[in-house]
Length: 289
Image (tube, rainbow, N blue to C red; front, side, top):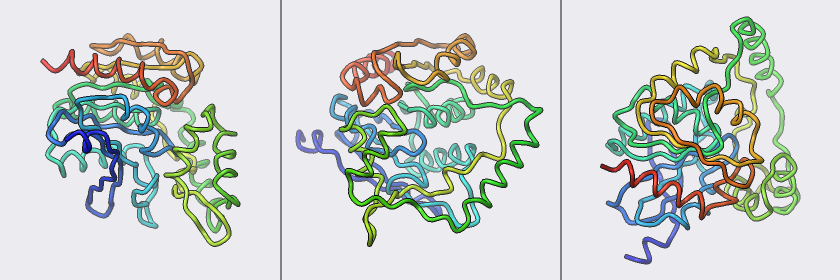
């Protein structure tokens, strides 16, 4: 039993046209905690947290287009709302009822929309450096559509960057984030692929397209108002400004909400896994009747 509890293993979920891959740790049959990563990250971002959480069955998925999961079909794109459907399919596939979710960045936005629409499926939600949603003014709707369509055209025929080795890829990942070397290495090892002339990214290039549609601020407020389950936020004092602003705009709209600020950046769950795990365990146990 102890061996299965200590090992991080690969896991797979065949969902309709997609295969969701991920990582699992803990004893099957114990309380499930579903971990959802952020944009252009992958399930490996939760390995430090998995090594700290005890007595839970931790499942971290790779979103479609990320990590080892399938890419969407050639005529499809990566709309925010479609991720909510991926989550619904995952729950239906596993017959999950009222489980706990831990979600970082973009994963937090998806989980928040899911919890608003399907409160019966979520017991508690822990947001990691994520609160609320990206929104745009209604007056920007046409401009957003134009930019989104043009970004699709621009991508056609564009080749993914090639790095000579893993060290080059880690350096590139760190240059656009506040990740430590070790944390960037975890993400790059799962998120990269050996090719003939070096290493390239596994992630679908279409993930970088500009969204052709954004929710308005009032729509995002409605989502948050409709979240009835307990929510906690764990964020870094050097995290993204979006969270500090979001606390102001969205914090008062939650029905049950608590926030904890830790020392660190946007990937606070990787930087401070022990502290984050303690907060998550306390929160989950408190809301398990």
